[in-house]
Image 1 (cartoon, helix red, strand yellow):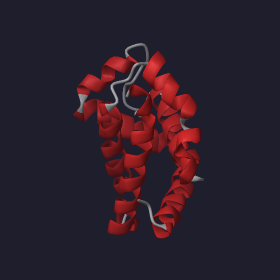
Image 2: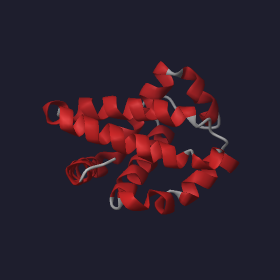
Image 3: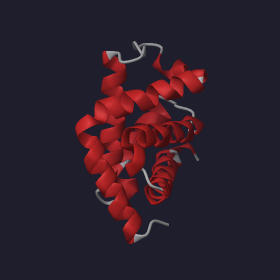
Image 4: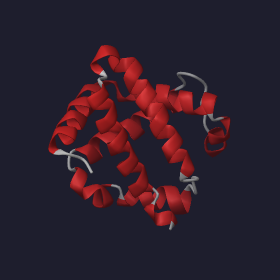
Length: 141
């Protein structure tokens, strides 16, 4: 469960990363593809080489979706409804990949924020990304 302090920290982080959403997202996706190469299969139609336009564009979309959903965490189901359907029924992404991406996102945030990525922020973002991915995977049940 996210405390009011967690929610405040999450919003602060989202405000910081939104202007560099493409950079953060591309780095997180690149980490995913290097560490978990099986995740590349869902992107075979795109150029996903490091710093490619496709990687930056898709990475930016992911970070912006994470930031948008953070505006009202109590409405994650509503905010993510379209993405749930897209990922489950059209793209058919293995929901386990969402969790792997979340880990890569945490590492990317730690690298980007450096000393500002405190233990409290780490815990808050981990809880939020876990909730985000759980909601995203609900249509698979």
